[in-house]
Image (cartoon, rainbow, N blue to C red; front, top):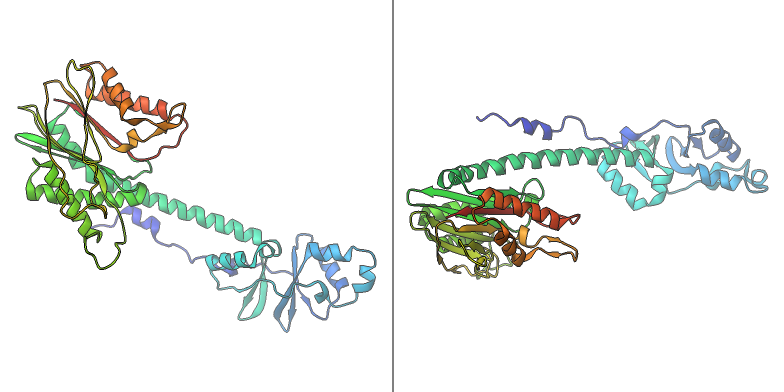
Length: 411
């Protein structure tokens, strides 16, 4: 059996979950035959007592709020009128009462249902129906805050380890790219530790395959989609080879629709409408020949001496979504490159980032202008660095909208 990850121990419960009994404090209590004068004495002796429980035969019947009681008894003639009467005159007959075994989550829902008085007055804790003590609304809020902080830490630990897994999944592609085109440069930045963008590279004797993809969502949901999509892409490459990008997109489309139940003619409405945008290409370095197929992603090409950056548009239909037919085809586009041509591919995290003085998307036009402004012999790493610097300046104080992946190489 494989050794358990050390991270897993962080998610195993170490202690008994807290309950209402953990918030129970022993406090003085009254009986129904005791007077308001006695209640006044108790409140005077116990300055920190916010509520005074009333019991009958050991069982709680109500709760006297300190502020309400003192406010009523301080009015003219109230002591003379009510001093010797039963303390139940100013008692809340329907306070929140909970059994000590009730867990904190359930107690919190009960307190919310009762409204503000449960937080202001506190609540009575019982054991087998008998009075055990009272709990403070403020203390309950502190415990809930501590529990939430602990849960958030556990969630972040799990997400951080998911990032380790996602990066390990992508490492073979990075290695393949380094073998196929050492000068190429790739930027992959999830918005939320893990993300919905992924890349895939594969090296062959006569060329190499590359793909950038942007799956539905970001964060954990997006990361789950990358596992499904990258697995489908790997299976399609094994079945068809890496030289027909459009055929591979069609294979991924079928794989995702089958896994997620997004099939045509399904008896029920599919539970998801998820998929990906992608740019796939096969490059033959000896011939400077590139075959490209895109699903809502484009290819930017800057040829030596050209006055503008060429945009090779992808197909307008995404991969795997409900509205993509099972037999959808993505056409291959052959691009003959001159030696030294710069090829740039990006997901929409770059194109759609809001920023600038008018808070608008960066857009393809600005990306083309930026690529054209770079020195004609600039290394791909320098080009990507200029793109990243421009994006940061453009974004300014605006929120990062999406995961970010872009890639460039020279033919």
